[in-house]
Image 1 (spheres, rainbow, N blue to C red):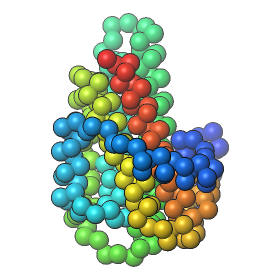
Image 2 (image 1 turned 135 degrees about the vertical axis):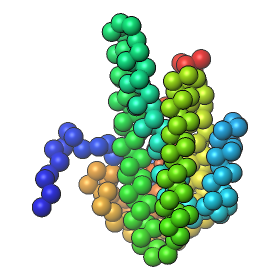
Image 3 (image 1 turned 90 degrees about the horizontal axis):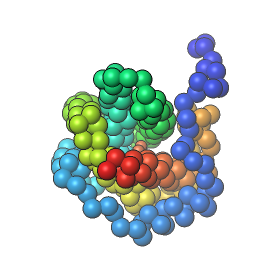
Image 4 (image 1 turned 90 degrees about the vertical axis):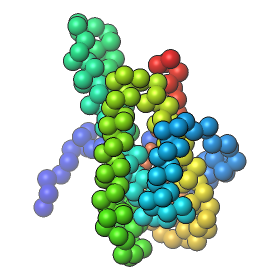
Length: 230
Ligand SMILES: [Fe+2]
Ligand SMILES: [Fe+2]
């Protein structure tokens, strides 16, 4: 049996806990709110993702997007250590940089549950997806996006936050529409290995709404950092 993980070391669950009715409300609001005006890096990435993973919304595509979208937080954590190490003195600025790592980690951990749930969903669908297209290419794109985020965070933090806000806004709207395309998911029970930490949900639609709301929280954190970086 594997060693039990102490409660305090357990990674974060959902970014905020909502009721099923609040999650439905999130979906309604998102479907009726305009998307951000995406910048060039985001538009290029979304176009590439449409070419590689297909234009329509599918479980394998959302799984690939989760693999790619989480690397911003990994890159920022690493960039913060680099920036803190470069400082001449251990000042409030150094402490502040280390504090950003905590938030980056919380978001990274949250994205990890998204990947696990999408992995489970993909396995349940039982499709035989191409290894090159849905396993290797997401990793390669994630690797390239990681470099982009590291460089932006070190040299132009406002670009990094803008790019990520676009990615998260895109993810939030895509989840809202994906669930809207599948009304049958409201009747499909949700069972997941993520449940002890990520929580229990009424249905598959309900948990996907929670994931979409998490992406909205990630977006707002980046927009908030963007205003402070300017
Ligand atoms: Fe996510
Ligand atoms: Fe996210």
